[in-house]
Length: 338
Image (cartoon, rainbow, N blue to C red; front, top):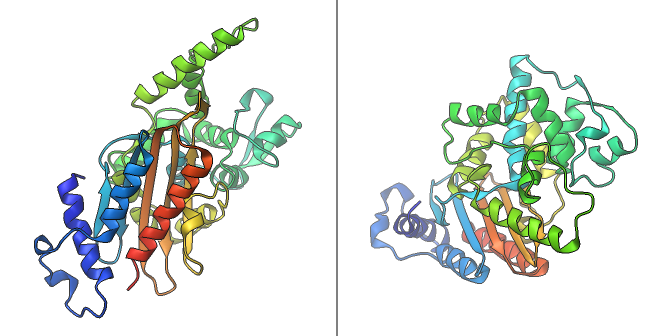
């Protein structure tokens, strides 16, 4: 999405949502005659606040079709955001009958991944449990953002390329999934697939290897999404274009059940539903490579607004990043008031 286009669409948002008492139908508005709205201004301000990190944003009002954004067509690393499309592709296989939610998946300690906290799947595998249903792994991957769970699902599905093929089959470009969590970890650790870190590595050598991995991750084109593509994924998911009604609601419930980490959710007004998926990379020398959240706001009257936010290579503190995301959600909610 180009900046000129973003301003134009934001002007539509300004007209529809920000001018009290207006009665003119939105489809009769000539957006070219309107000034940039406060939503686009808020997004631009957020992008400036994020510097020297890079912030990509896309917002869609589903009812009107109005859009706004910053760097909306640039690819950003997804991290755990990718677990939402993985879950959608898996549920599609369940609907086709090639997988069952009741199917048991056997795991060993070799299947453990970093990023698996108590009482998640990873912690249970480490404690000795070896079998989980696909349904339990799905909950672990989406609601608990468990890395061990999502890699187990990718194995039974046929690998990351299956997810990208699912997205392309549904007209979603700009989002690609090439690696599982283990592959992402290898990049960050500057290791080849199957390679392990030297057992006698010095602290200095470790730091240098991790710095190389950080730079390699930022330069790697795999497991990327544009903010606009993430909006399109959520729009088609919410609209029932990807899955059956039952599977759609199942995935949205799992996303709504992701209460931690609390990013955009912290700024969503009381009474407004929110289903989202966050993604976070490791930190190297005070910089975080990826800090993301994509979600769907749903008002009691049926109004739906989608927001996707991708922050890359940020030196801001965790508090500053969380405040930025919460403020973004507040700005979007304020712009969406009738």
